Length: 138
Image 1 (cartoon, rainbow, N blue to C red):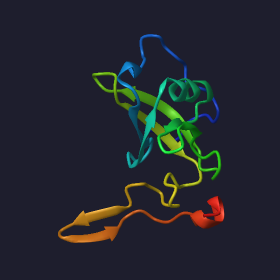
Image 2 (image 1 turned 120 degrees about the vertical axis):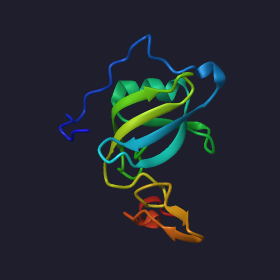
Image 3 (image 1 turned 180 degrees about the vertical axis):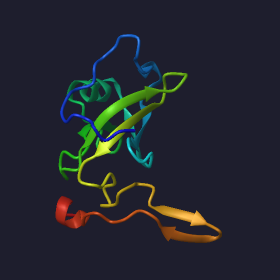
Image 4 (image 1 turned 45 degrees about the vertical axis):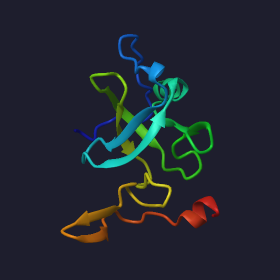
């Protein structure tokens, strides 16, 4: 995909393109729009979907805090949504995003999928971009 994205335009909503929230919270995968790297998995409800479409930035539902969550609202590592896809059952969302600040994970890493088991060895495979203690104070 091309990097010639314009900055802040919101996604256009379409009544025929709606996730099926009657099934409850839906998984939402954030994937880098240029490299294809999977950065994280979170969950969306109808409010998070609507806010994402309105702002063009990823919003999710925090299952632990039980509240709407603007990704990067605290850290500054926001996700600019370049396109959204739905699976064949309309119950999984794929966001193709531009990750601002380089880190999608609250641990300060590029990807939440930063540990890898390969050929019997575990290694870290995603770089640390920021120190979470300095950003979140914990």
